[in-house]
Length: 509
Image 1 (tube, rainbow, N blue to C red):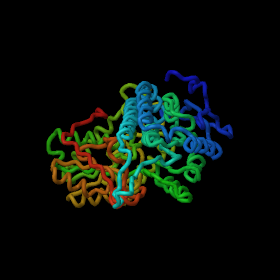
Image 2: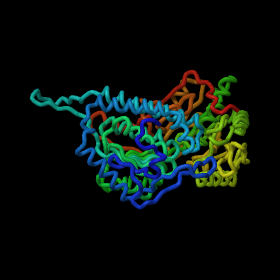
Image 3: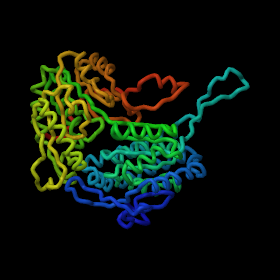
Image 4: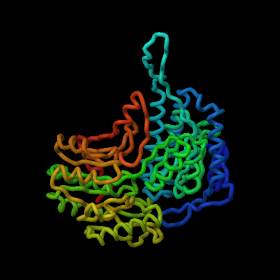
């Protein structure tokens, strides 16, 4: 990355950015950042705590209350976001490689992530630049002028997960900056590197001092303090249900705004008519692989539950397992590798526990279910686990009900449309799901009945910055009065239909 007065290597473990300065942790504590492909450290960051968090929040508070950013003209804020997007494009290769080493994904996945991050900054720049200055409300008198205007919330606290470090950060940072807010972000303590790099790009783009702040450190100190801090006006959290409920409780004390995205257990419903042609069958199998095994299944919207019509189950699962067994595992920077390691030894152990419990409860292992043998592209210390297909699963199994966040696909079967919908909706989550069918009427019916925030028809995983992303179930924020108040009494769902589905071939098979 060019034009730095101080490189990240020269800065060392001064990875806390508060009030325009790069700082070490006040306690002096540090953390090694581990490459999951070989379990070796490749970077050192500051291990911040509550004191460091207070310092960053104070800087963000000053920048909002007495700084220029909240009052910067919309056109200038949009222009800065576009400059950030251009810098992301400039540094795409370096950032993609850094994301691969940090999170274990392939470099190609990392590059795609950076493209999506740049798209997010451009989208919110265009969105805020095109907003109307206000909505006039008829007060019933010619002597009264009443208008609803939008203003920035204030200081935003952002807590992001380890699986898509920079993408999830951009989904929070870009709209917050577009609206004129200041922020403090806490990336996952195990994958912070690209978020640190993004702060550098924001500074390079000309963001005023104190607007962007980052504290690297663990959730039980930094995250907890951000959620409860009285000078934070909004907290946005993406992660697990247990941590999310803690954030909500802490935020409730000061009645701050809360946004939560807490994962999912996502169904991929395949009707037999989607497989009547060879092309249809091949496409549905290909997308089932992508749904379950992209980034080793470490995706909140992963299609880890295959719910398939009984008449085509055996043929479909046999081909799915055959191709899953051929997915090439290895270090994400190696040529030809299709899937990287899990992010940590803890995550691999969790995956192994889920598979063991499923087999004990009667699931049938069709492929995978173990650690692969070491090889030149798979160092012995890496956190690799084979893509796993578990057949003959049922709803009482832990592996079916709980979020695995690993390369595990469970198979359930149905005979009728009603049964398919009942199985798909039988979850405490409601993030995403998919329907595969050649019947347009059935596609609309089933999509309309699924209680999931995003429903794909004859596709899996695409998202659009213009569409809302969120789920039903255990997350949400509230509004009252006007169009927003009406929306409070409706669930928002994004239905995405691919009218010409084709294989994606992320995994060659």
